[in-house]
Picture (cartoon, rainbow, N blue to C red):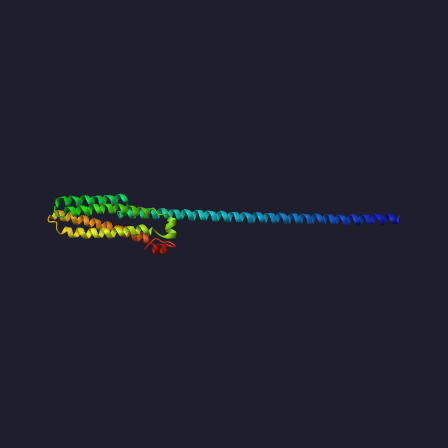
Length: 227
């Protein structure tokens, strides 16, 4: 009888121990699962933060690019406006030079002594103007990337300066010829056209200075080789 009680007690103890172990294992499993879940949530949160940060950076980058493009458009519009105000666009210059040539030829037709010389100077200036316009167009249409790294088109700016020197020589010749004009109206018209050409020269000089002042990384080196 005693043996039976002993066996029953032993089984109860074993059962209790197993139940405790089972509960402990279950608790550890729950804790482990909870830890994994917390880790997953932390990773998801970090991923969301990284995504939000990337989205913010992309947004700021796009915004900065948009602002930069807007500044470039404003600069181009400003340059174009300044060019039109200074008579630097092709249409205005061609019109001004055509008027210059026409007026000089009209005076030349009435001045037998100096008429032929005046016509030659007017024709030379007309030809020079085509070279000037082509050089200016190449400078204005130069790539912004090339301008940023290598500077402006110094070669064609050099062409413009060369044409300015030749124009200055023609103006000096016209000043000498003007002394031989007797008719006051013709002399006044002659001087008016020379003043208009002087103004065109100043416009070109301003254009050259504005182009040379543009920032570039290695423009000084390119300018050195183009001298």
